[in-house]
Length: 248
Image (cartoon, rainbow, N blue to C red; front, top):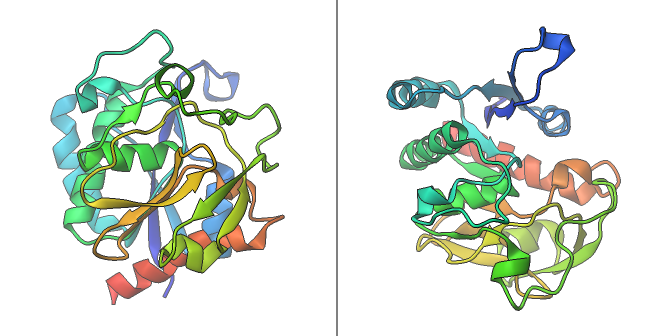
C-alpha cells in the first residue's frame, strides 16, 4: 500500500514572473521528496480565502488522505489563541491559519495520523487549545540558544534531548543534533499533548499524543537533514507506517 499523505499549502505572497505575477499556493520540495522516498503519495491542499468555504472544503479533503503532514511556514495569527499581536510578530496569513486549525481538528477527530514540523507543531498545539510565544527573545527570559539560526538550513546548529518512552527517542535516540529556524515556540502545551523533546534552554522541541501514537511534532526541519542524517527520514517513514496502519 502507498498511503496518501496530505500537505496543507503555504502561500507565495510576493509576485512571481513564473506565474504571471499572481500569488500561488505551494509546498516544500524537500518534504515531497522525503515522502516519496518513504513510498507515500503526497498531495497538496490549498486553503480558501473566505471563511464560508473552510468547513465544506475540509469536509471534502478529509476523505482524500490517509495521513496529514503539517509543514513549516510563517508565524501564526495570535488571535487564534486569544492574544493580540506584539511588535516582534512576523507576517501572518490568517486564512491559512484558520484553515489549518480546522483541518487538524477534523483529521484528529477522524483518527488520521499526523506529523507536524516547526510551524506545523505550533498549529497543532493551537488547534488543541495550547498557545505560543509570539517571539522567544522578548517573551521567554530563559531562552538562551539561537533558535533562528544564521547557518544554511541543511546544517544542524544545536542539540535537543528526547524524553524516555517517547516515539522520538525510539526513532532518533536520546540526544539529537538539529537545525533551527524559528522565533516562535510552544508556551502552554495543549492538554492532549505531552512534551517529548526539549532544547538545552527548555524550549519545546517535540510533542506527541498523551494517549496514543496519532500525533507527533518536532520544532526542527528534518526534511532538510535526512539526506545527511538518515535517521531523520525515519520521522517520515513513521508517519507513513502509522497511515498504513490506520487505513487498514
